[in-house]
Each structure stands twice: as C-alpha cells, then as structure tokens.
Length: 313
Image (cartoon, rainbow, N blue to C red; front, side):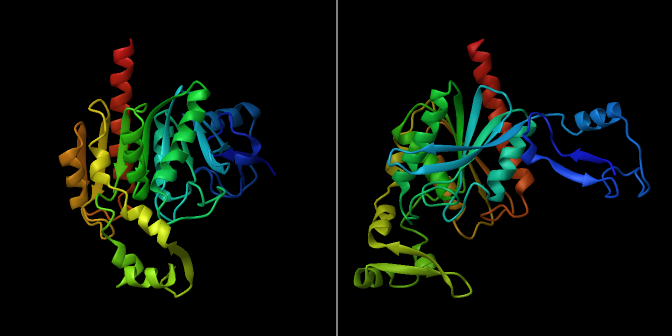
C-alpha cells in the first residue's frame, strides 16, 4: 500500500508530516481501489499541497528570571517576524493564536507564538496579575529574535495579551506596530464577575481567593499580591506613553460580554496613532468570526510591511 503526504511539506521535519493511506479520501477522484503513483506524480501532488512552504519548530527562550518560555516558530524564511501573545489562562495553542499564525504563514510572514510564564508549557507559576512581568517575558522574546538578526515588525495580543503589548509599547519603543485584540482598558473592571461579590473583603481576610470552574472544580488561585498587581496597572497612563510613531490597531467584537466593546473606544481616544476596527457580532474569543479577525489583522500587517519596505527602498 502506497502512502502520500498531506498538508504543507516545505522544509518541515518528519514529526510534522501527516500520513494517510490511499484508501482514505485524500483526492476526490481516488477510489478505494489500489492506485499506482509514480515518483514524479507524487512530487507534483506534494508541491501542489504546499504553495507556501514553511517550517514549524519549538523554540525555548530563557527569560530574565530563569524560567524557560516555550514557543512555536512558524518560519517562512522572512527576516521580519510577528510575535503573538495569548490571554489570561490561555496558551500559544489558543485558536486565535494558531489561526493568526496560519493566516500570516499563508501570506509568507514568519511568526512566533509562545506561552507566558506559568502558562502552557512554560516554566514558572501562574499569577492572576503579572502584567509587567509578562511585558518582561515579551521583551526577552523580542530580544532573542533581535539577537538572531530578525526584525520584529509587530506584536499582537488577545485579551490580557492585548494589554501586555500596549504596556510593552509604553515602556519600550523598539517595535513600531502593535495589535490589541479585545484588551481591557480599565483593569479595575470585570473583577466581581470573576472573583465574586465582596472579593476585597474575602481576600483581605484569607489572603487569597480560589477561582472555580463552572463545574465547581478548582481552576486557579488569586493572591492579594497578584490582585494588587492588576489593580495598580493603569492602562490609561501607560497608553499616554506610546510614541506617535507607533501604529496601533485595536480590534474588538461588538458582542463581547467579557470585556465591553466600549473599552476599544477608550483606547482610540488616547493613543495618538490609532486605528479602530469593530467586528459586528463577534464575542470575546471570536468564536464565529475567526476568518474575519484574521483578515483584518493580516491586511493591517501587509499594509505596514508594504509601507516599511517602500520607505527603506
């Protein structure tokens, strides 16, 4: 029985290949009968399946605190690279992260999606706050690629990750394109929905609050220190420090029930070089609007690349 490769091939290592028998419906004109395929035909089918060859590889970067941050590099052979940042209690495997990486890959732009400290495969302890600590993680990742002679053309973050990329832009001024997907403007908001009523009284009494899943099982612990980290992180003041030269795109869903769409308008009021795009009907994770989200973000990145390459030439 002959086997063929499906999916993008390019320079991928063997562990990323998907094998299927010819008895499975790979090509619509194949029957379940035995089929003889020449080497030439097989190579042609492989080439047709991979119009944009790319490689995916795991990359581990040690941050300034000694924790190993684990990420996946989507290598398209470009010097430019985009860094993708996940949200609270999420990871690099979140649908938004993987779909954006695939969309960028389709237009030939390399990207890197990674897990913040204490999330996914990365080392360290999860913390509810840690906003500036995650900015440090992002800086360490950016420095890694700068050291590899790459140009980080944009940083993209969803939800908490959206806040992190904006905070990064307020502190460091080396990356001139930022994409904020459904970030929260007022970090004092949304706490009662997550932690329950009288959360300040309870955390002062016990020193922590255990957040439970809908089924009642333990999810994660919020300490007084991590809560205060969030409460003391002022997005308004930080965004006032973002350079005029930094191009910021904010995307938000009109039906977001986790972070209200009004937060996007607040960012638009205070960030100088800002573009706002509202996706009608989209919820917080863009459940039924992944393609539209990817299109908006990728078109923005392509426009920036075109401008930058035009300026340098």
